[in-house]
Length: 416
Image 1: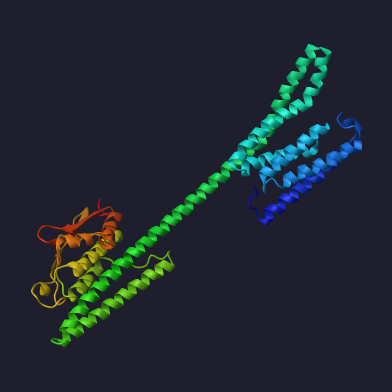
Image 2: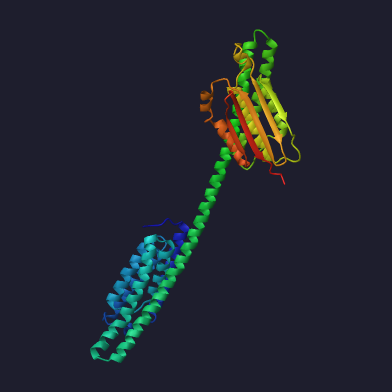
């Protein structure tokens, strides 16, 4: 029943209602004469008392018009019925009805919106009946048909004029309501767009976090396994493995710190990997014992868009991580301890004028059905999302020979 209002709005409404009450009081007392009292009230003092009570009622409705439009409309109807029952003429306080009809259309519920519309028409009909019909009844008693037609015409015109006046206030409120709804829709749309942008940013950061952590941990695990088995036979190999673990962990820590900084300050994009960082990525994978062969033909020419460079780097990073985790290890396949040597991984990049094609192939350590279940993880999903973000495609799966192949085609945005 009551709408939430700020203290300022409530104060302004009460102040406006008070000023209106003072105006209506002056407009009622100054011209008040016995001849202006309707035939329903004999005593002028009683009529004045009723008029003052009605003034308070209409002023109260005006004060409540935004806080509770429905209650304000009900007060106006009760006051108008009392006024007509007492036979009082139109009063200055009746002007409050226009303000109440305005707020029912502007701030009321959908049901109250149409109740205000119906009240405008019903009020206009009541005004016409109250002002014209009593005189028409006298004419009917006298039998003067010509004068009766005049009264009927006057009643119709009074109804039309009253309806136009009351509906004007209601229509203005309806226009304000439309403006408020449009503003709310714009704000809701902006909030939805901001939320979508924030969600996209969180998804991007989560994807980067997965790529960084998964790749780094895969390298660290491979190096730790190799160092554990090589410690007794080749202490220097174990020392080199520990150095690689330290360097990889430090790089991963720096990347994670950068991503966490982006989470706290989403305005800052932060530096992103480029093609120049691919050699460091290859070096980390080779240091983990992977026999990595990279073939780039043709080589990249011209300026490569940053989005394409990032997509190429992240897809290669995830594909090589999967090769470390699931690829066949040469030493293991030959019966040597696990982690001593990884199988061969082939990377082929072709930088054409309008697209870049990449293929990452490695032998599988486990049977094809077991690895197929792993394809539902976040890694392959992330690679496909990377490719789709730049308008490309990516396929990944095992072939009959037991190799797992990741192939992607990404468009060159700078192509003309």
